[in-house]
Length: 163
Image 1 (cartoon, rainbow, N blue to C red):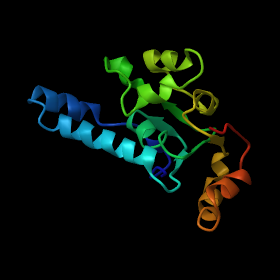
Image 2 (cartoon, one colour; image 1 turned 90 degrees about the vertical axis):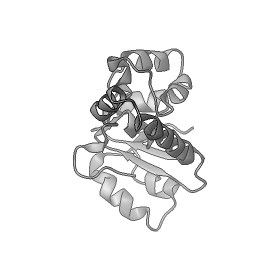
Image 3 (cartoon, rainbow, N blue to C red; image 1 turned 135 degrees about the vertical axis):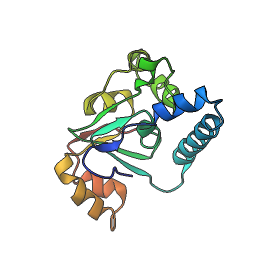
């Protein structure tokens, strides 16, 4: 899973559309959340390697489609987090589950502040497994066509944390 373009993997859901739908009666919001949570659950249980290249912005829904994967890669460009709290929501997309697993109260801090996290933060909190420089991502994607994720990532790995 990678983003289209240079901005990042995914900057999250369209909060403005959800807000407008709620004002209009909320007919589309519940099915949206249901589909999103089902997708995140599917990703977490997918039996094949699910590789997320978390390069650039990975916020809100972007965390859901990446941090539940089996191989989660961050770069020096990664800016991740669950900023929903800044608009009065609780972290969604399974974020409360992910952050509850973080050491000490660091997950609580990330959840309550909506802070943007860099690659080191994502590794420490358990939202990611590996750091690979963004310049090596194209090479990594090509290697994944013929190698196992462990082999492909291992040759390009600078640092990482295994689950």
